[in-house]
Image (cartoon, rainbow, N blue to C red):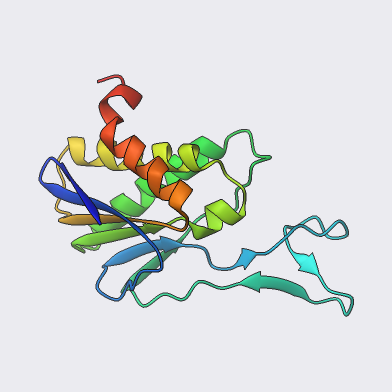
Length: 164
């Protein structure tokens, strides 16, 4: 696990799976479609018998927030990921939890470019802690080695990404 200090907040990145039971608030997907059906176009695989196949991410954290529906086809996908991360951090402050976990499996399955996901989540974290925070720890849980390296790059280069 790699750790970074963002104004006194421990920001770590690790490869999943990860036990979220010690995290105050997590951001995950309510269910993850495993493919795109030509018939329904809703991001699910429809079987011959008419059922849809999706994966549900288990959560044991106190509070669970969900990623909004977003995919590679959405031209505003970066803004959507950034805003969802900012909203989750604000929610964590409001309910006074000490730690937040961001899980990226759903975004990867939605074929979001790993560098876009990493940059937007890290930008949201960086922007949030700039004004002061009561959070102690933020955990970025990557679902693949590519996502892990994208988070590492974003964390090491946030000042360049943010033009600070």
